[in-house]
Length: 276
Image 1: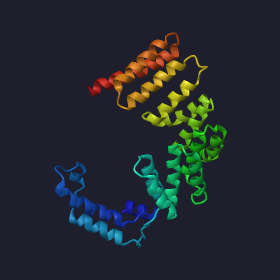
Image 2: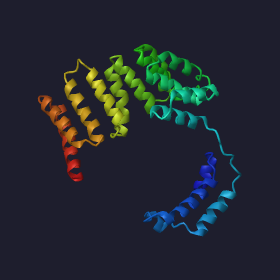
Image 3: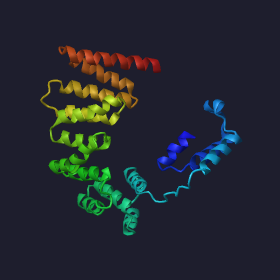
Image 4: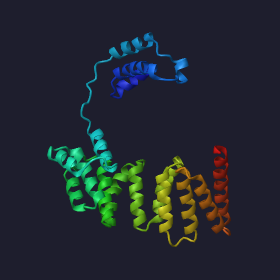
């Protein structure tokens, strides 16, 4: 009852919970086994009726048949997964489909046609002024043309207002690496790694930042240990251990780094043995 009240207050349709229960109930006949929660929370007819009765006590919620954010996500995903053609996108743009136009900007950016990408993006900036994808895509268009300062200016203000936004932070880190500001990029990415040490993209950016830091005496060591993390969390544990062993050999003489590598190496080896 409390959960349904929260859902309604957040704008969700309370009828959806009752619909979900009924869908689950119809699906049980096709399951070869029942999940554990079914033993303590069976879907009886009384429970489904009660859920529907509670939902009916709330005012009806008009369903949103058109959600711009969803449309942006849909068309952008189609572009990034190569599931849409230029012709189809152009048809949608001709019909004034703004989310498709934003996606077409990404399409041209991926194709290397930055003039067309910019034209398409300029046409939707006023339509979606608060969508972070606008800032990310604009920065990426500049970055691909090696306009590093323009790329930085395109994203920095948005990133500062939303420092918790991972895509914004990682795009900014990519720019900082290209600008030769490896230390700033590492600081930016490390916050997210500390929260989620399985973040492959974060480790990959740290590897790139370490490789760009040509003045660091531990450059090769850091590249190897960050590469090991990318390999490890990608499922290539054996390759990761080899990379970490290589880093360990090169780090001899630096007690602090050697100790850090040794601890992580032991952890990797122990976890791999448990899997075997």
